[in-house]
Length: 255
Image 1 (cartoon, rainbow, N blue to C red):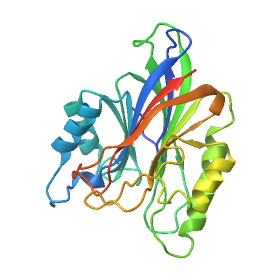
Image 2 (image 1 turned 45 degrees about the vertical axis):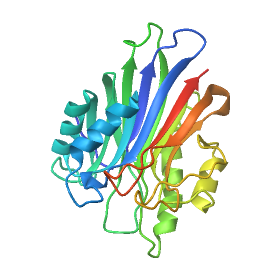
Image 3 (image 1 turned 180 degrees about the vertical axis):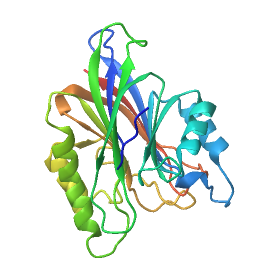
Image 4 (image 1 turned 180 degrees about the horizontal axis):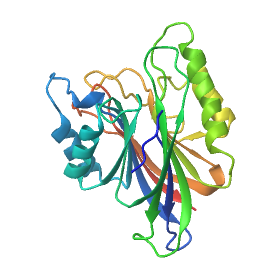
């Protein structure tokens, strides 16, 4: 399977069994599968994903392709790894899906640090779930995380890059997951909303980091457009110590 470099983006194809279809989405920064006890938490993370039972998952901070493949094996889900450094034995992000991948692609995003980030785009075939086919785009990403000069500008620029790279066709219902390294009142979140992104958590107060004593939210699931989606539920899986972040989950209905 061809690999690309730099933010995870997914385009999902799935079927509409009637007037709507349901999708459960999960986003989780795994901290390279190191738990808060300092031990390898890969198996615990896989069990946590199985407990949530999502259709698709955006994972951030994956050590390499072997780690991604093992999470896929343990969860029984399809997996695509997106290397940030252009090599399979380097760090990156990953996408899990219950349904087959049909297409993938990546786009570089800005960073003010020596770290590199990537966007992967995939198409997922949901015809197994339903006979009629529709298209859903899902973007999974990890924004620049430092507080150095230029880091906020890099995050703001990333919003523009996502728009230019992935929104030539605005008619596709889209989901955006990831660690944005921005709190709800940040200018980065405001810029996303200006483009039409809607937070599945609404105006709720949610905390996703640190997992031991969470004090702020930087992990999200967004969607657009308003006319094409309905949010049934959004929640944070509290009390999970397999990473320094807490996973977030949204039950969505596409109209």
